[in-house]
Image (tube, rainbow, N blue to C red; front, side):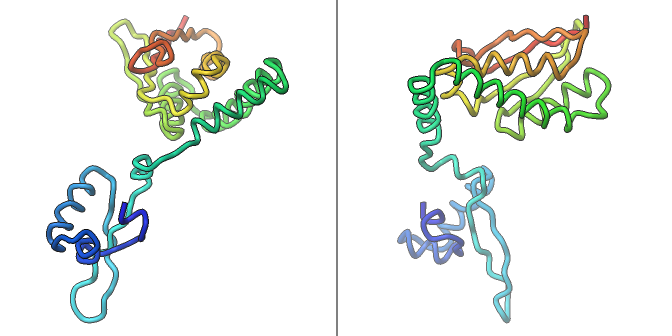
Length: 198
């Protein structure tokens, strides 16, 4: 909280604000650094050793309040009540089309199914889905999404999940089947897709 409110600080400065020693603050900062929550940058301090100033990493932002999920749900509910389900479906379909264009460009040049699934997992991870893929003994591939960054919206409107599945099928091409085996919205720990060449 101190780093969020006051920006970069040395361990000594942070210790003073917290009413503890600089060394005690440094120990806590090292623990947070090991978790990926803070980082230290060295800055020249004239004669002597450079000063280490600590700041938050982008990953640390998740520790602070964020109402984007409730705002998204409010907007979707407003669209539905003011413009109807058809308008909401059009918005979701447009999102799918825009995503398809971006994904197709990023996946161009990937010819094998394994390469396309790996590229898709990388794209999804960059969007916050914490995605991975693996190959099963039968040769099928499993695309796994360990997190759903749009869960609040998807819970309100299943159209997001419907278009996601359609998008995967389209991207992975003809002759490939994609079936959702696990679904966060239905209470699973993750979303998982079984991918097979016909």
